[in-house]
Length: 185
Image (cartoon, rainbow, N blue to C red; front, side, top):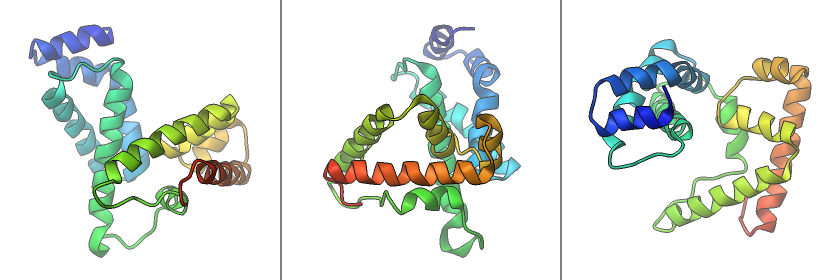
C-alpha cells in the first residue's frame, strides 16, 4: 500500500490505517525505539504510542512524505521515554549516544528556545549537506536512528574504533561549522 493510500485511510478514519501503517513501518519504528531505549517492552510501547499519535494528528496534518513523519514521532516518543526512565536516578547507567552530542548541542531554555531550535535544525541540515554521502549516512545512522557502534561498523565495513573516531571527527567538524554560523557550543 502506498503512503498516499495509508494517509487516505487516516482521513477516512478507517481503523485499517493503523494496520497498514504497522505493516509498512512497524519494523523501522521498533528498530528506532529499540536503538534509543535498549528495552524491548519500552520499544513496543513506543511503537504503539506512535500509531496512536499518528491517528491523533492525521488529519488535520497531511504528511508528505509519510515515512519521515512517522519516524520523527517514534524518535521523539522514544527520547521522551528515555528521559523519563533516566530522570531522578531511576537509571544508574549512562548512555553514550546522547552524551556524545550533548557536549556540542546544549538544549536552549526560555521563550526563544523554539526559534533557536528551528535555526539550529536548519544549520545542522546545512552542515550535513557539506559531508560526503558516506559520512552523512554514518552520522545520521548514529544520531538519528541510534544505531550502535557494532552495527555501524558492520554496515560501513569499519572497525568499531574506526567508526567511533570518524564520528568524533564529524562531531568536531560540526562544532566548528556551528560556531561559524554563530552558535555558542
